Image 1: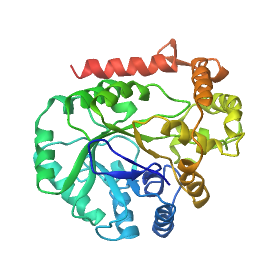
Image 2: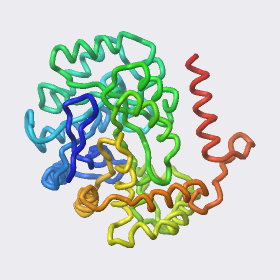
Image 3: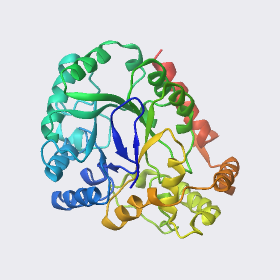
Image 4: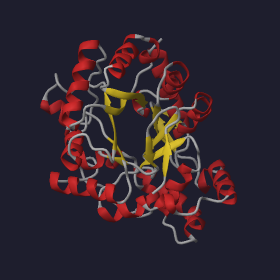
Length: 354
């Protein structure tokens, strides 16, 4: 394993981290507490020191799993968790679903949420506390940053960051936080097949020296290289909601990437190396849900870096959508590309926040 330090912080974290949502929720299959704890401990044994979770993951289960796996105030791992959703004043049915819960950022609630996460994690201080799916309002409202500064001064959190959600806050929000608020990290979606709009944040992050945390590095499993046209996802699996064209087009794109595995590395490992080729990225958070996959991904940082020729070839493939005609979506009688739909959604969100 190799390690990187989040710029302007004292947090040195493993280049491959562990996104706890895969074992805490049922979006990627079901794990018992014993299975999840065993996998978390195996991750630590493989050199992974950075574990990212959220209070919303199965109503706090992600945090309690970490406490049960590593005990109180562990010295050999670093936690990041998230806050902002009100999981305390919503019904069990609402929390079980995949719909979005209401946000709350008033002083009373934020302090309460912090205390609850501290207790569930079994720690006296949260190393990195992130606003979960942050809205544009958080860029302009000073109170939340005053509260976060108070919590820092009290020693309850060490650093504050932002985790973005594409469906509920993205380009405008991310660049707003980067440029106007003192964040220690920005968590984004970015991968070889879905570079935009994650790469929109690189210029501001570079200018402000803010480290990036990257989730979904394998494009929801596509870049692990195991899907076939016959792949069917379980009913609770969030990939089931992707259109079938995503599966079929993705498999075609992978045919152009065979050169990445000629040196014996797996496609999943090279997908991680591609992201780590960007110095701004402090840690990559693959979706880990079994021991074999854990070993594969944890070994990625120690493999040779992608060569300049590899990166140039990937840039050329990106320009031609990896040889696959750009997918079209039909929205309200209109035909538009996926990228055009992303932009239309972003503009609608931005307009609604003015």
